[in-house]
Length: 489
Ligand code: 0RQ
Image (cartoon, rainbow, N blue to C red):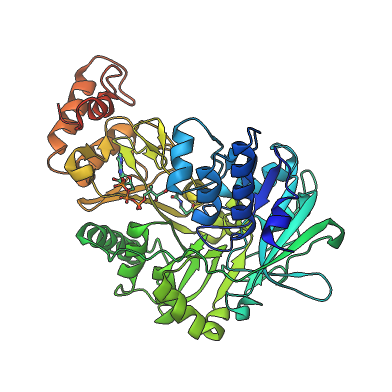
């Protein structure tokens, strides 16, 4: 049926589980038709909102369209749409920011309430009813399992040869019946290539022919290249010390330009036969596979620039042998991240001198995107890097601060902080030792004396000396930026 007819089957107040992960594999037609319907209902004076659950971020056709008409009551998990962000920060959307590996199980345990409708993009439906997944898997398995009704969008635009690239694991159960997940190698297959759905639940099948988001990346700038250089030197040092094998351990890389630049840096690095165990496969990882630097990679979504998408499509048979797409509760699973010894590299907004990291909030209160999978990988990885340029907004903000304005990753979860200035290896250090290393290695020279002054005075303050702080002053940097446009006194 058409998208409008299908959208008419979604009632006001429904909780809708949509496919989609970092701009790929989301439904494109039904959310827009639903937004048009919501707009018409609002114009007629009738309230109409839905709760929207996804895999991760989607696109203007989904988050953007629904946020624009004020149609979202609750949203979870990771999002990055500007209109959606605006509504969240205006207090109009209840945004629930959950670790990506936790979403499926929390829904499954019943912690989030019932799921009324799943709207899932697929590439095709087999005669026996199994579904060919599209460019992302995300939470689709779970949405199809637990939703009362299912709407399928069958997209004929993405390369049909994606068929066979997926590995959908049906072996999980609810505690106390859970079993170990027998995945011992990053790109091992433990499931099946298709999604299952009970045909009795399918209330609509909507044909579409639409491309994914395909955002282009900025060319790595000097800061990103410097950050990548510090990480590669450090990894080489770890190999030399015998703490990492020569071809390293599986790599996870977060979203964004800096993360992409780090992977670009590995192209010229000394490492061969790399493996990826990540959630998103971006341009940087595709390039590593293309050049043979990376043997194979596991992810839950492929999110490429238009140019990289062309390369991927042209040589899809080559890539299908080297890429496995899994459900996000598997791609990000703590058990697997820890067993495989993943090297986690994620971008952040700010870190404090003690190594607490903020990945999500601007000045304590405004949501940027969400925690995504950064916590899944950071807490459980073999090594965990957090990276950022040392300053933001033209130098008016130091990304190294006395105390972070929001904590996503505590000092207990973070190991290595990197800025273009240098790398702070915090493993095995006490808070006081950490602070000095972070100030010396990561802070921008313009801000270093102020941080040193704060730390020195906290040490002399007569207060407790495990994590020396001046509580009355710790967040004044942020307040000053809000008041004056600069953190500088
Ligand atoms: O704002 O766009 O208005 O200029 O924050 O900063 O430098 O463009 O950073 O694109 O690499 O994203 C952490 C947000 C970094 C991302 C974050 C301002 C800065 C700019 C963005 P403008 P950049 P990136 C796996 C891993 C969480 C999820 C995650 C993210 C904007 O990486 O969402 O890790 N991570 N997932 O000006 C105030 C500061 C600031 C600041 C930067 N200290 N204070 N504003 N900005 N530093 C993937 C998934 O989970 C799907």
